Image (tube, rainbow, N blue to C red):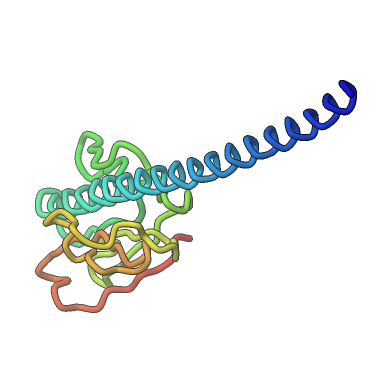
Length: 170
């Protein structure tokens, strides 16, 4: 009799352990989804930061055209923002040649026929989590359905109203 009782308890214990493992698996899966959302939000914030830094660097580079002489040709690539040799001393507009934080790839350049590179955009077709309530400087990103539509472009008198061309990085 005691042997029969022990064998039936083993079956119940086995089922309880399976049930606990199933519950733990579901909870870990939910935590994994939450973690990936947190990571994507962080990458979005980093995209906004890096895009703003590059846009500001392009503006500063172009504003120095008057100081160093117009007709230089504008920004050719991120490396020209790292070291501008137009002055007697090297001028650095950008601290680092960042890659796009969403895709991990090179940025797409947005070019103007006159000024060269006037902005950057992510090459990612992924849908962003953030679609509204952007800070004032990024209000044009409201309602965009892909990261590649988040374009960090300088505004100049020469480029206002002109079509912009997005090109892939070579």
